[in-house]
Image (cartoon, rainbow, N blue to C red; front, side, top):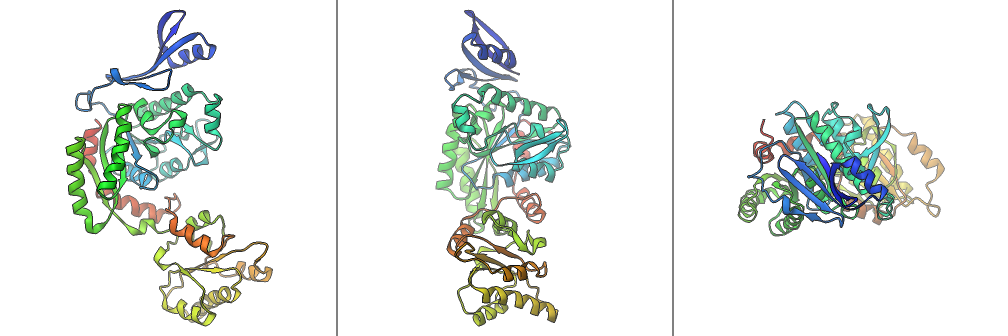
Amino acid sequence: MYSLSFTLRNCTVTSPLRTAAFHLKQGNCSSFDCRYFNKGTVTSRSTDGGYDDRNSNLDLNKRKRTRRPIYVSATREHVGKTTTSLALISGLQKRFPKIGYLKPVGQRHVQVHSDELNTEIRVDKDVALIRERCNMQHIDYRYMSPVLIPQGYTKDYIDGKISHIDQLYAVQNAVENISNCSDVVVCEGTGHCGVGSIVGASNARVASLTNATMVLVANGGLGSCFDELELNRILCKHHNVDIAGVIINKVLPDKYEQTKDYMSRALMNSWGVPLLGCIPDNPYLGYPALADLENLLQSKLINGEKHRFRHYTLDSMCLVTESLPTFLKMLRKKPSQTLYVCHVTRDDIILGFLAEFQRRKRLQSTKPFEAALIVCGENEKYPLAKELRAMLSAQDEDVPLIICPYTTDQAMDKIHAMTPKLNISDSERVNAATDHYEKYIDYDLLLSRTGNVN
């Protein structure tokens, strides 16, 4: 239950949030204390936006063991939080009939159809990925992404155009509705525990509001990894959020046993918190697909559309500066699945690439031609000839070609710096990620730490 205690005509009144919100908007109350009551835990926040933890100092072991949402937050961006959430859900679905999921505060959004509202709505892109991938048809989209922060939202919030109370109510209402139709609920945060603070909806604060227990996700290592975890632990402590455990991602295989041993002891000795999972790095999960490169380079494949989810290693990426004869020799010596980059002025390289594909096709070569070509630098100064563009568009659909406006240096830098994200349509990588992660997570320990024992 979510309620407000406020002063109305010199009397202290406690009432449901909607009633209290009405009086606040009418200016009838001089102060208020916003509290969330659930199974013996109380989280309080006052009019100054801070927290009063005096009424919520019970630790996890002293609380009544009730099923609580599992809140997944990271130490920073690009540590595999969504992949971890997907693996947690997949493993939990093998233990419970219905698993719930939501992303309380999201940023990048897509449009989907809400059956309950019978209209199109916007939700965080990860919500669309996980609902479809995990077949969560028992939950309507309207509850899975209660707060979205598009461009301009922060300014509107500070200007008072967005109600803080309505925002909190939306999150609480979403969690309650999903909890009512699910055995266990997984909440996925956005970034580290402090993300969203400027609009009063940080991961730590939302976890406190929803009485969730936190699972922190960090990249492999020891010293720097623990330092990042500590910063997020302090914020969780400030908001009276229990930490169920930690999952370490992308651990170097040759340091796996060392990392698992030392991090387990460090967490238990310092925090009294277990290591729930230690996941060795799988390089394939970081290989970009052509679809990732389309988004990164803000361009579309002009050919080879059916290979959008073919993956390429960064080690195989090759900037072509050689002569045409040297390039043709390179095509025949290098691995077939190589990503080539050239400038738009190199008509000879573009035509040579197409010619090698046709040669292998004509000879019915047993070695498949799986290379892709990114043509860079097209602009007013260096346009691609209309005749060449027409020739490229008319090629066999087995030849992946992307033409982008960035220079070759810019394109190479962007590709090397990118972290590929999961895509619902890239079933090969999604399945590989889920299978890889599940093997290294202790689900029984997670469930016991969060009161979700079956």
